[in-house]
Image (cartoon, rainbow over all chains, first blue to last red):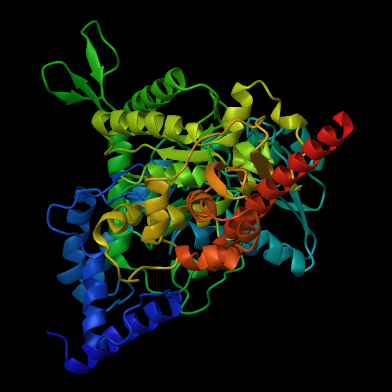
Length: 475
Length: 164
């Protein structure tokens, strides 16, 4: 149904991309007609009939949208499509009502007031807004910002930009279990510190920082506290008043919501002032101008409401759902957190009992169970990922990052460099089944054994050689 | 984040490994089928007796860099390489490079094997620029194995002279 010129342009651009990415290899088809090649390219990316997709075990990267969220969003894509900021007609009013309802759903999940929620394009934008916004607003008298070495890249990069603007940024180190030292934080806070930014749950190793204690420290020292809660919201209970958090970033596509939307919690009492990043018509209380994408906001709201329900749903044996406390009758507790913990324990125990020399990175207790980072000694991470090709996983290995540097988070927790090259991150989520976990564990055990047979380091260790005593050819 | 984007790439890799045929219809970050082939069916994995007088062992790389290759060659009396084995701690491209290296040195003389260049290995496997260091390490491994063999032969000669 596309016009011919559009089709030609589309195929032409695909061809353009593939030609530049193509290596100069022998046997390249020299003169296939352009449109034919374009069609081949498109076809090669489609699934063959009956082709099996890999198991998805990378829930920290992104999550599939919950079908109930999609149901909530669809009417706002095609029927109630008005701009929520249009004041003069029913299309605008109904869109605005939906947007405000979504705002309330997000606020309820974190224990905030709906007026404190700002919709953004994602956690990256929320992080940028809070860090740059707070720092720049208070720059007349406060020039110091504190963050940690294990933060997400968007936080670290925002801090780097602030440094180039003349701010002082302290990147606090973390202990070997991934948690920050509270005493060190107290000593690092200066009279001219405006902001402390510490993420709630780390996306690579899954450790949960002591947010409540950090919040108390910051409140006592009159410093604003921002937390990147993208991986934590909807998975662990969060109440911004209990945790004494002033700014919180939320990401839609980490909680089974749509991609391209997020939110920022900005406290009103005591008021946090931000210099806005995006200028325009003054939407979202002037903090983030731009039309709020109603379908995406509705999706985020629905995802938050579902997360709240699923975090604490209790079934009585017999089928009726209620939120009753444990009574004399047996209750089968079936909420997200318990299920994810059970699956995670299953996976880790299976792997660690069958193969030796496996290290779990990050604190074993203060963590979100759905994010497991394991280092398999003497086996390189990328080769293991290649072996587990029918499971979608992620690695902290250098080879899988564009720069050949191993993950900075693993380096910050002091992992040995060779173990940092051997790490794999398993993500478990709402839709993971026991069969998937069992299959992943089996396959992992099998492939680690095979790769260790191929590894000179394993051979040397079996012979009793201490690897640290060898002088390697490269540093 | 790099991790997440690569994670997404790897999820589609499972499809690419099975669906693609000879054409180069793939994005830069996914593997060429030759690399996958060497990885799934590596030739000559194993060890030779490193104390034998006609076996040269080359161990290059460092665990801290994520790449360690051990390449062993067995040479007969005429100076021809009759057997080669490898073991590698490294990514798929590193395993493929060392596997290919063992294939190529077999049947060559000690001097001919010295002429194998990393560019040839990279071209054969269609390695992307970010993986070229794997082929360099494979070339270093070959050279190290040959140097070790030469050293052993020199020691043998010295011992033989001393006895005489």
